[in-house]
Amino acid sequence: MDATPLTVPEELARGVRRARAEHIDRELYEEEKRWRWHPGDGEDPRTVSGTALRREIAVEHEIAARLGPAATGPEDARRHGERRRIKYFPVLFVSAPHIEEGATGAFPGMPTPLLYATCVLDRMLRIDEFPGARVPEVVAVLNPPAYSPAFEEELVARLREHRPVVVGISNLSEGHHFALRIAATVKKECPRAIVVLGGQHEDAVNPDAYRAASRRVAGMSGRRQENHDAFRIGAAELGRLTALQTLARPVERELMDIVFAGDSAFALPEVLKVVADCLPADPETVKKRMLADPDRFAELPGVGSLFMYDWTARRIESVPLSGAPIDGDRLPYIDVTRLTHENRFAIFGHRRTAQIMACLGCKYACSFCHESADAFLYEQPKIRQRSPQHVIGEIRLRIDQGFEAVFFDDSTFTQNRRWLAEFLTLLEEVAAGHGTFEWGCQTTVNDVDRELLERMSGAGCSYVYFGVESAEPDGARVQKVRQLLLVSKADWTERFRDVAHWCRKAGIRVGTSLQFGLGETPEQRLRTLDLVAELHRDGCIPDGCVALNVNSPYPGTRQWLQMLQSGAALPDYREKLVRHPAFETAHQFSAITGPDVEALYLLAADRLGRALHQEQPA
Image (cartoon, rainbow, N blue to C red; front, side, top):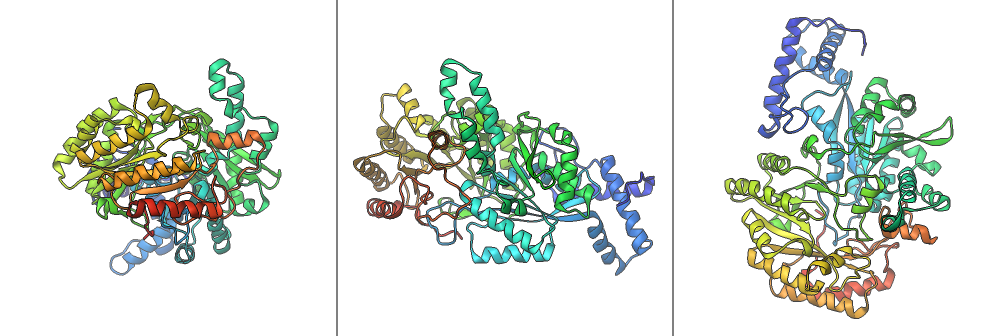
């Protein structure tokens, strides 16, 4: 499209503004019409910016140049098709699954990491304010519950139908192998497509972040340095870590063009602006443009970097973001309207269920969890909480969209009592107006009591998932156990028993995850299973609400850092995981493998029976 400044005739400008107002009234839900960029900003989404106005007029001029003056009748459809070809370029997003078809022990859900990564872009598109001469059109967000031949067929069909200019892939460490396979399929079908990869795995294998964290620890002293000593790594350890970074291998450089490590909510639209300026785009042109102007990314909110392989310099280049934390209240709500797979959970009666994150981070520092480690690695506040009002607005939007239940993906939803009290006051009003609405969350037995559970129930809570891990967890590895001992005389077993019965009396169903391989004895395993079986018999834990896990060293956790420092072989999640289908986590990198994990499953199945989660992804 010609970038020459355009004179904007007032009649055409009025038409553009009228079309925008009609678009907002037709396409947006009421909760979305009250703000422009983020809830509470006080701006009108109907306002047409100068950039958008000039783009629309340029599109009209180009249509007129190709087809002549506007006409009525059959010509309208032709002009509409031409408008789409001129204005938009296709983009496809994929949430890489972490399990294969046949797994029964996992809980596939909404791809919230991907949706939060695209939320700023999605808002730009929903109000037609993408700041570029051409506009990305998200043709689909593929979120398969499992990797399967049917998913591969759908992926290929979408690629052939839309020929996307950009394909974005989000992945966890357990899904990294499948993310690489997806990228290979994309490059086979669409060799010129720009493949962008991001997600928790990329955050956790970012050598720049570890290098910076190690320097910070070296500058500390005393107890503070001791608390973060796991992040103090030398050149040899960094070398081992760098080998695991995506783009470290030649084949990955052929598959992945841009890798996001860190926040991408504001960086992703900026990348797509570069693409729009380079159309018809190819990966190398886009990368060169980005590397030539890194300042445009250095000004963006967010932490982390974008990585690209420079074929001329023969090295991985990084483009850092500003490092400024993103305020969750200044983000728009995620867009759930393009997902190709809808999750319905038995615990909510198979009703439409949305997933929401009210908070990032956790106050605990369990060695097997990446939550608190991520905060230190990227020099972020340990807990990043959205305001109660912001979260309530999203709940109202989901209800308007036809969702009947919400599950909060926060790792420890009840960790901030002051926030929770204000939130529940607001939520009680919502629940009173929608009698069938219910919600669930996950938290720890430390962070609830009888009175709180009763109030949560009164506000619509019907399910709480507790990360119990074991009846007698090792306090050195499970930091929340040590925390309980500081504030209570009850041991972990008695605390879980009490909490489960409080939940039952409040009308709240209990789910739990058990984690084996944390140094427990065979006798402790039996006591764990017997405790859960008892609570199932007592009616506290319903059928299908117990998930089995085997401790696994995931990148970004303190456990993984300890392996890095010890010199032990690091697990490479490029490999396909050979996993036990009945466990959420049980594969070749886990603490228990092979015949031992099968024996553990048989023991659990015998003791727990119908309490075990055994669900085939739909």
